Image (cartoon, rainbow, N blue to C red; front, top):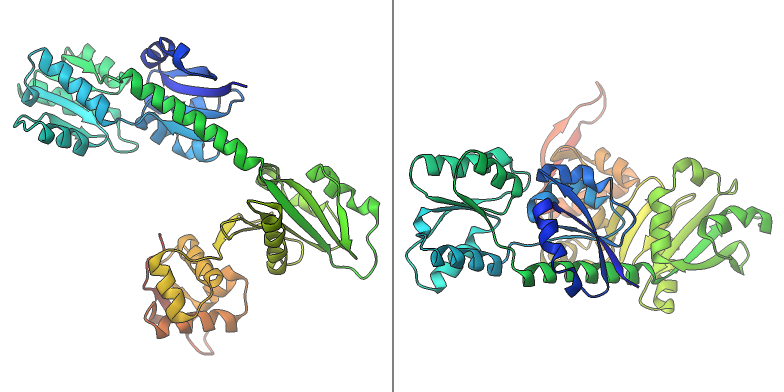
Length: 412
């Protein structure tokens, strides 16, 4: 079966790719073209069902990044590699153009610098580094001003909109050459990402549903769960049921399941937990471990990488139950905090709007007792991973609250 890939690009890029479609094995391309890379965001909403999305460059991808993160399929873009840059610069020198008279917009100037240093040349073009969400007008101004000031005689751009504007301004301009091999490689990589995503989604997921009731749950009460997960529930012991599905189905269900739909599942309080794994034994054990961490009327997923996802349906947080970053390993080791609690503190730091906080702030976020939050903070303070930076008085009577700040990196 062919892999369906949506290509978001300029008209010129689409024409180029169509000339090499026959070299793309088991791939079907759907084209969505723009005049300006900023239109890529709107085009995301127009793509028909497909297996992956491929962008003709980094700029349209960066503009559409937020929308891409919401897609259930992988996205990829054509990277401006050394082959494209070397080919373009070689074409210029073959035409007798001096590189010192060239302006070029490029995602990574270090690549061009490295190529030119390797061939021991003293000539370097004027370079503009393309940053995410850059304004097109800034790039146009860079090329135009250099040409008007007679510092350059030739502009090179990888952005079709910039090319068109410079042409209208009578600035000599050529497009960056995208070698056939680079385009084929980029689209083939997109195909491989699509295949990998499908294989991951098809992996087994084991679930447990535990009802918190003294009476025996009847089959008709299980109907909503059967409809939701489209699979049969197997009773393993009184009021504890297991089910088998795929990781892709679990992800899709929790992605779109509303709190209202969740409440309609059962009038009897229950816990729901899923485990992922490379085999059924690992998935089953992860489901059992997740169930131990699940509170009433919530759900958790424990992945094969020991990431605890949830609690669903309200939150989609990720708690690391295994610490691998060297800095965090050292924090966990010296404070004796569990990887789960350390991960929760990091999550709190990322979501909390201010750098400074109180034990009450941490308690509310973690949904733990005041004693637990204070114990966590004491361990961090004792080992200089947090410090008391002040205090606040929220009431006229009573003890003032200590104000804390974390002293270790949380953006790892």
